[in-house]
Each structure stands twice: as structure tokens, then as C-alpha cells.
Length: 362
Ligand code: MG
Image (cartoon, rainbow, N blue to C red; front, side):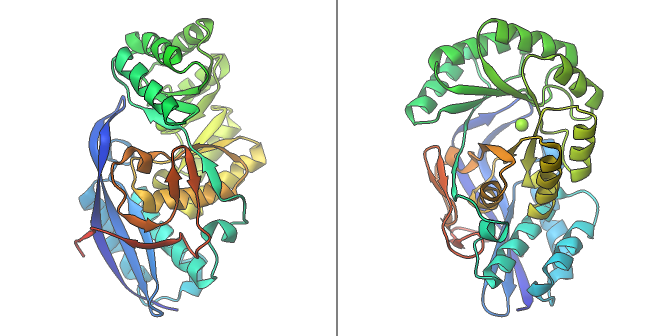
């Protein structure tokens, strides 16, 4: 079964409401979709969102990297050479983790199809049902309270609250959210916005106020590992590394230095399922629990993330609400989102049968 060609297109999905974090505001998802075509007529699909604020990649850069650097190395090769092909993707050039993720996910889709297994079974199996949290954008406290109330009404029992824009308001934000969601588990994400001392002070105030915060994601700058370790050592709230952990080497360093209590794995940071598996395996060795996260992504790549999360027991927390934030779903098959529940089909590969409304570029 040989890879005979590839197509690259754009996929758009509108968001129900604008998505706001300490780093950016976004109104719609527009992702690059890669289709690898095979000699037996099967198609492997991958996806990459341009998240320049985090990975440095734009729509144009993802398309150029796939078209000029990665896909030409895959065409003509046999899918049975799966491991070598995955290494080709990672070694094609440095950086560009989201473009690599799109290609890596498409290869896993193809390889699992050739084995007639869903990806999660190829990864070791598991229960094909996940429960995701819901992200609440950073806003004025009253708006966030309303959003939290709506989330609880929709059945979500874990809320991920974005904070960090004007840190002076963060305590008020969390009090408002806790007032509106008394029984929900509340985790927060500062997206690098705080200084280490500010983080320890704010988190202490939140717990003193009885807000019962489950964990805090990325309180300080991505490269400030010393600062991250300071917060981890001194904060009453467990610390999860997100923007500080892209590669499996990053993950190892953070765990060795005890700079974080938890890790957030995202396919777009690490370059796809192959490297995400490496991070999960390292975390298993250290006994460090992980969250499966996503960028603002449509359902192709989030389905891939869901397959990994089902198969790895060290992934104990799920933050895969990208598709749930969209008002439309252009993907046929794949993960089924029903409120907080995500179910995977038993079909081979990712279980995706097609994608509507792709605007093909290549
Ligand atoms: Mg985060």
C-alpha cells in the first residue's frame, strides 16, 4: 500500500462566541487539512491549526512546510514502513510542530486503516469514552459567571477558566465563577501571564477564599523553568506545564527538575501522536499525570488526540473542547461530541469518512 499523492486544503468552522485568553482573541477556527492518498484508494487525514502565538506557525507556513518539505518525502513510500515514515516527518526540518502533527496524524490514520484497527486499539486499547472539561474565556467577572452557569447547565462538571488578562481582576473572576458553579471542579489557565511571586500570592489568596482550585496551568512564562519550579514548590495549587512543554525532552527536563506537578500534552506542540506517545511514556515512568489538550482545532486532529487519551491511562484529564466551541462540524465520522462526553467509533484509523467544505490549495 503506497502513498501516491497528497492534497492540502483549508477548513473553516465558526465559533459560538469569541475565544479569549491572556495571549489572543479568536472568532473562528481555520485549519489546514492534509489528505494523504494511497494506492488502495484509502485516505489518511491530518489537521493543523495556525496558532502563531504559541507555536509560531501561520496558515501559510504550515502549507509551505507540508507541500515543500514533508509530503514530498512520503510520496512513493509504503505505509508498512510506518516508523521510518514518522521519523521522516520529524527530521524533515526543525520546529514547525503543528505542520508535523498534521502529517504524523495522517500517517497514523493510514497505518491503522491498513491494520483494520481504530487508532486507540493500535495504541493498546481502552474504553472509547472520554469526559472533557469546558473552557471559559477571560472576560469581566459577571460575563464569566454567566458563561460558567451556562456550562453547568449544559452538563459540564469541570470548567477550565482562563485568567491573567489584568491579574488584579483574577481573584474577582474566580469568586464570580465559583459563585455560579458551586459544585464544579474548577481548573485555571493563566497562559504565562503571571510573575512567579504574583502566581504564588494569587493562588494562595484563591485557596484562602475557599475557591477550591484543582490545578493551575502555565502560571509563568514558557521559558522561565526556574520560575515554574518556584511556583510548584510554593503554591497551594498543583501546577501543570503547558507552553513550557513542547518536546519529550522538555517533558523529561521538567519532571527531572520537579518544575511541574502535571503535564499538558497537545499534538500541535509536540508534532503529533508519535511524540505525544513518547511524552506519555516518560510521564508513566515518573508517575506524572497528564492532561490531553488541544488548540482551537476542528475535529480531525482532536479525534486523534481522543484516540491517544483513550489508550493511555496516565492521561487522567481531558481538555478537548475545541469542536464543542464551534457552531458547525464539517467532519463526517470521527469522535462524537455529546455535551461533555466524547465517544470514539470502532471504525479503522481515526474513523473519519470525509470532510465537507475543504477549500483545496494544493
Ligand atoms: Mg493552556
